[in-house]
Amino acid sequence: MKINTAEFIISNSDVAKCPKDFLPEYAFIGRSNVGKSSLINMITNNKNLAKTSARPGKTQLINHFKINNNWFLVDLPGYGYAKVSKKTKSIFQKFITDYFETREQLVCAFVLIDIRHEAQNIDIEFMSYMGESEIPFCIIFTKADKIGKMKIQSNIAAYKKQMFANNWAEMPQYFITSSLESSGKEELLAYIDEVNQEVFKNNSGF
Image (cartoon, rainbow, N blue to C red):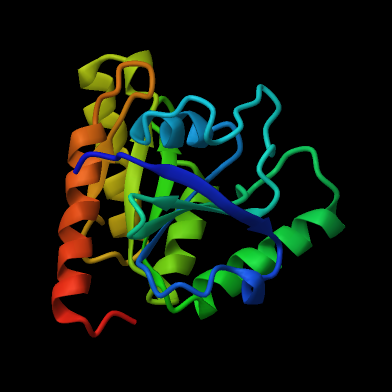
């Protein structure tokens, strides 16, 4: 897939105010400072589309971007903020779970994980929530340019081991990416294109 247009549509904290278009949506979410904005800018060929910041927790709303006029990329607030109040965090979590559990247009979520670190409990817990809620998702490992290939494979193996220990039957589909080197972009877009074709072909959609 080639991305020709990427247009910001709306930011809000109320799922009921999300776009009414019945187009497939792909939600991107991860811990603070996982490189989500950089990844979104990389795959859309637009370095200014999602706002990047050295300060974790910059994304605090549901952000919809219409891609090629036929699907939405949804940039969601992170989970596990270090520097927001408990009240603010509970508000984030509420509209994040509202989005995942009520948004009919959502066809797949991408959970972003920093490949430099071994399995983090907060990521395992979030993916367990997704699995228990039967929300389809894939994993995107980010920042692959920061460590060697052997370390990448050992960290992924550690995630597999921990997920199997938490009663997962298999590892979700995953992608290894680097925003700096634009690696993983083609594989990720090809996957989205494949899912879109199924959605539009079946016309059962949502």
